[in-house]
Length: 152
Image (cartoon, rainbow, N blue to C red; front, side):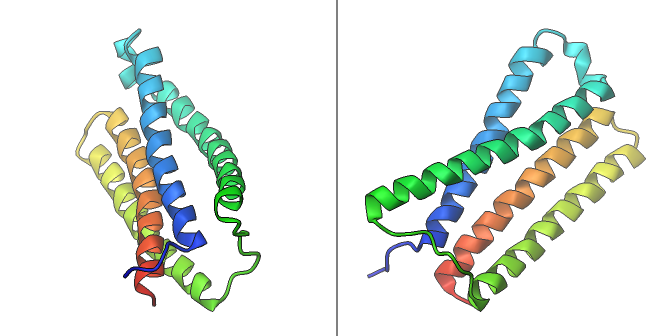
């Protein structure tokens, strides 16, 4: 019989779902509001820079709000408090997940720069950078869930 999910596992699952939803909904919003109205924006570097910069604070604010709501709902449902300390195991898991996510982002960065080296459209570089940033976040959350389940 499997033991129930720990608080950290639940928190990482919530973070994983948030990351996927934020990217999906923001991409849909940008596509419907801007790109369907003016398809020439796809080659506009100023547009991609603004869209990318707006994504960062939106992601941060939504993640903070969702995590606060998660802690409140978790307390109501399970009567379990959020741990107010991290032990060596938590730190080791965070470091391993961070290492994996950095490799994913670095790979995406090199692919983005490579897309420009082989003379692809500039918007491809932005797509790859955004995708690799979110893929790194997803890899981090999945790695944390895996390591909490498997142990170190």
